[in-house]
Image (cartoon, rainbow, N blue to C red):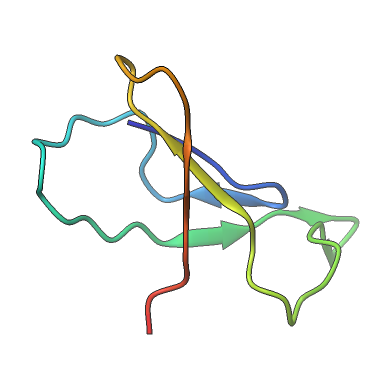
Length: 64
């Protein structure tokens, strides 16, 4: 799995996950000159997840 989140670094990236297995990955905000790199701190980030063998990425939502 590969996780892409502008303005954030996933706590774990490029890992293996069996089909149907849930996973929860923390997103750590990037900081530039001591300020958050994300454009809007209050909006949920756009998260794209891609399997190495997948034709396209999927978007994820914030866990509630």
